[in-house]
Image 1 (cartoon, rainbow, N blue to C red):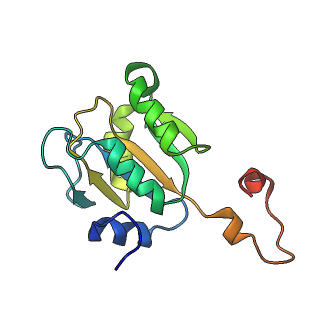
Image 2 (cartoon, rainbow, N blue to C red):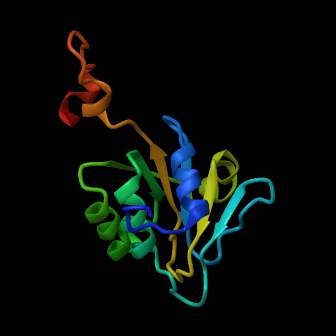
Amino acid sequence: MKKGMLLNRELNEVIASMGHLDYLIVCDAGFPIPNDVKRIDLALKKDVPDLETVLALIADDFVAEKIFVAEEVETNNAPLYQKVQRIFPGVEIGTMEHQTILSEMARKAKAIVRTGAFDPWGNIILQSGVNVPQWFDKPGIVVPDYYKDKM
């Protein structure tokens, strides 16, 4: 049996297949998922599961190098922004136009995880990173300046 708390087979497979700088989107119930992008649909009913639950489970198995949210989130959905900060401490959070997330970034995602969240601007882009201490642990390897704070 698997040790971790994340049990969904499809989500585990996607996380295991992620490479450096790949995108995984965790979205609300209303996100327009393109037909040609892998969809992992977890939605059961309003707010089940919610974004916080799904993001927290993913965070246990996923190295996020950067996170992107819609420009409106910090001001118009501060509780969601604070949850993302708490779940992914120390990870840079960038913003982009909501329409860019819905269109261009949706097509670039390796997969999109649909939650049951009814959360305005509740579409979170996780950019895959590397576990810096594990990648730079061999003698003689020089850690680049941009990763030194992650050692």
